Length: 294
Image 1 (cartoon, helix red, strand yellow):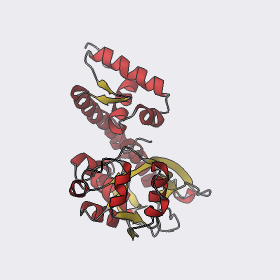
Image 2 (spheres, one colour):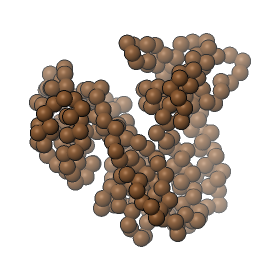
Image 3 (cartoon, helix red, strand yellow):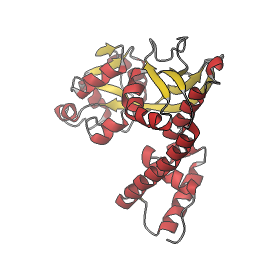
């Protein structure tokens, strides 16, 4: 191939590789599904090898497509990281970020060193809130909140929409004979965060008796839910975004294709009096590069 493919086509492939569906990639890129499909077909034509195969009604990446998508992801990350590093030069000061425990431990903490590389002179402090949507701490400069995004007196940006799906350990799945159908979940011990809401919504969608969703254990912290799930103590409604790495490593598995779109999402929330802080602006820019919106 003599020329570099279009950036839009490469972004379409990278987004499709992460999400696994054309509609989610289209949603993230603010394009129509047909536009994303067209970009992927053009990219295949330019590359000269197949990126995707059809499996029933689904499209999935070929081995070549997966390898190429990973190279594209690395290349786009290098470009984005370079922009953030240049923008962050000379930024100093302190920055306190409030973040839900699950988001912090699964996504932010493994990547926080990259922010330090971008802004080495910013002293960063991470705290966790009392509630996932709490933005009341006056000592915090920037909040990552999980909720409805209804903070009218704040600057609010959508970071990530969330889907929930049942997750369990491979050992538990084996004990439950592989859960061949949706009704198999009735055999499992259910693990809940705070209340029964997410499981009730999923049971309703699955056509299962809602009262059966009101069983099992409740936890006040998502990290506790995941710890119990990893220890094969039961099945939880997992945030696919937060659990992505655990699923990729095979330590958590998704026994069913059925998922629910949460009414809540992750938002970046900034008090207006903190918005002019250069460290806040640098962190917002870094987040935009590290976390493509969906």
